[in-house]
Amino acid sequence: MTEPGTAPGDQYGVPLMGRTAVDLAGLVSRSAGGDETAFADLYDATSARVYGLAVRITRSPEIAAEVVQEVYLMAWEQSARFAPSRGSVMGWLCTMAHRRAVDRVRQVASERTRDQTYQDQRPTTAADQTWEEVEQSMAAQEVRNGLGTLSPLQREAVALAYYGGCTHQEVARALDIPLGTAKARIRDGLNSLRSALGGRR
Image 1: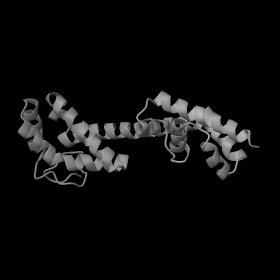
Image 2: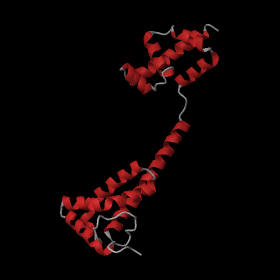
Image 3: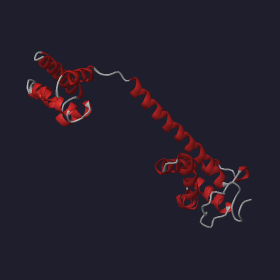
Image 4: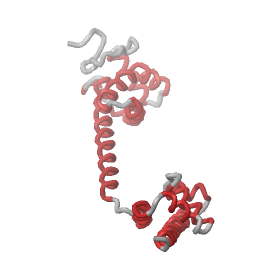
């Protein structure tokens, strides 16, 4: 049972700023003619309900806010196609919001799955293997001493990567060098380090 002054499908618990279903349909009609003021009024009267629905589906205020933006962009673009005989304005907006919110939830889930799959399948790089061998076979003091055998450029890159915890990209940015150069310095430095430490065993 709907409340007086509301349209079917409007039971989302947020007031419509005193607007009736007829008022909202009129705002959509005027928006279809390019009336931006009418569209702003439509947004003010309905966006709280659209946002509430999006939050309940996405469980994320940030994603819900993006969904609301997308819904009202679609509403502006499709306002000329809205037909009051086929349903209420709130029903129309909430249908779009529901679809977009579900799409975003699926998208986020897919991205997380893809990222996890990438991490699970990512092969260990030669540099990582070299470093693991160094750590497993030599004491920390020996490793620090071994860094002294590297060239200054190699030592700087290796120290950033393996003592500073920087990624290859971060090393490149920190040293203001191309990514390929950073990777090469780290790789060559670790190979030299392994050779130097191996010679002391």
